[in-house]
Image (cartoon, rainbow, N blue to C red; front, side, top):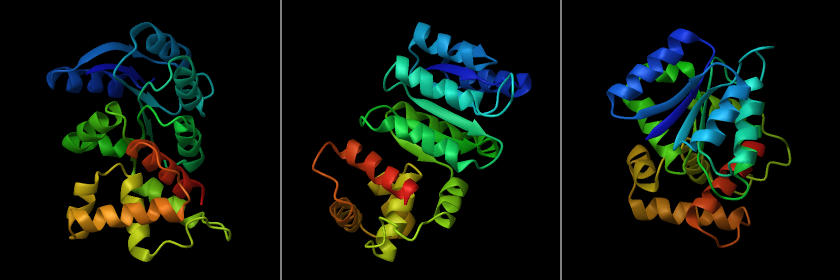
Length: 217
C-alpha cells in the first residue's frame, strides 16, 4: 500500500514509517501538521492515510478536521485516525463523511499500534473500504444511548452483531467471535438492515449506514 502518515510526535511517526516499510508498504509522505496532511493526500492520492487527532497549533482536533478536509478534496480517500484517548465526537464527525457509501475510515487508540498484526489488519481493512472502530470507542458509544434509541427494536444478539460490524469485522469474523454459523450472521445482518429501515443498496453502503445509526443511537 501507498501510505501517508500525519503525526507531530516524531518518534511515533518515524516508528510507523519503519514498521510499514519493513512490511513492504511505501510511505509516500510523513508530515507533522494538518495542512501538510491535506497537501500530501491531494498530491499523492495514497491508498490510506494514518492521522493523529491532535496536532499543532492547538493540539485539539486539527488532525480530525484535516482528515475531513482531505476526504472533501479527495472523495473516498481512506483515513485511519489514531488518538491517545477515546473522543467519540471525533469518531462521529469522521464517520459522517462516509455518507456517500465509499471510502474506508477507522478510529483506533494509539495503544492498539502495540499489537502490530492487529494494527496492520485494521489498516488493510480501512484501505479496502471498511470501517474500523476501537472496541473502547464502541463501548463508550453504548453509554451515550438516548431514550429515542433507533436500535431499540434490535434483539440482544443483533446488537452484538452490529457492535462487531462497527469494529470492522466481516460476517465470517463475526461468526467466529460469536461461535455461530455464517448463515446465522447473514440472517442477523439482514434483520438489522430491515429494522433500521435501510434501503437495498451495495452491502458496504448499508453496513456503513448501519454503523452510523449505531453511533448516533
